[in-house]
Length: 302
Image 1 (cartoon, rainbow, N blue to C red):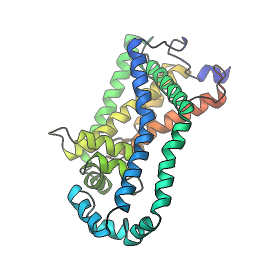
Image 2: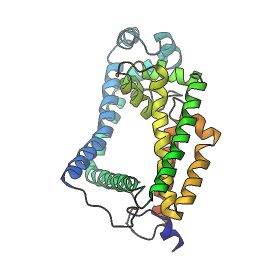
Image 3: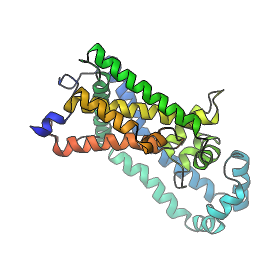
Image 4: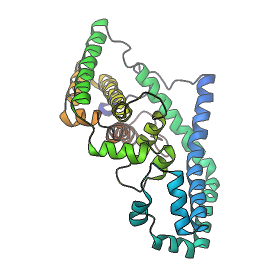
């Protein structure tokens, strides 16, 4: 009973899982297709890069790299710390083995395509349930309660803007912009072994970088601020569902005015988005292992 009360099962009103409309089902299928194709895209990209590396000389590769990505890491840094001559020799010597292994990956992936597709369908279903739950976060609140919530969020936003303008861009933020965002989304998503690159965050900022007029500070920090507001709203919805409005407001205020939370909320790095992922993972694990309302053989997709 204690656990069952605290799990936000379906919506703020406790209704059953909402049924998607026609547009929702079409959007869900499209999202499933995107999720399904992403790993295949990475595997195909890996195979193509390996073929490119194995089929060209070392100096020629460095020359092409410099021409294709003039704003990325310079060729001398890459040659010294990443793509060394010894690595290129190893790739050339083990070319056949590399092609076999990389070609086997998409074949193995497609052999489990039905199970993978069902997983993505359940994942999209869980995402839909979560969005419906959050959309009804203020349902049932009185006008005074809604006013109190928006007043608190306004104070939090003012506090965030103070940090935004008071703190100059840090070294890590500038490094992320110069080497992972400015060169473009391709460098962002393919530089995942390199430290200080938060792939999803850098890729998103690289897409935002195409919008004219955005300063470097706005480009790198506004996604974190938006993620922070989403996190605080999610905490409000969850705690209000668990223990009521007053404790939800206290919880939001306690999290929002923590110094570390405020610091990462305006830093142009992926740490704030990791906080959102941590919350989603914690709630998903809680409902999967402790929930009593819906039992499934393999637990929840989230």
